[in-house]
Image (cartoon, rainbow, N blue to C red; front, side, top):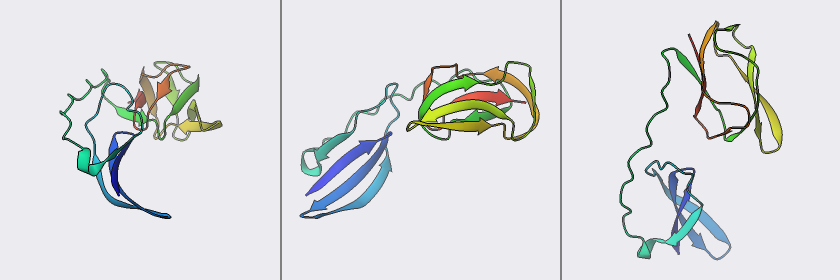
Length: 132
């Protein structure tokens, strides 16, 4: 039996046989403004979903964005706007899967914008800050 499973806005066509499951095809799903729950639907009954309009991009300053490498919660913001940072300096602490992960500056520069705040939930690829 074939199913389409959506995880993190990515569709996976999965074929399930007794005692075995295989991914048949992977496609990008339309981005929605809210996280989509994990869904399992038989392929035969799947009608094309109306395409959702992409969420508007956050108003981000010019410079190099620092993106979240994984979904999680921002535990601490170690920098302020206008602060000079060195490459490798810890700028955020992100909790993911009950582990604290240090997010470092990708290069030397000045923090021109902090997008994520302490306690915010972020998804993979979300902009946390911008360094110029």
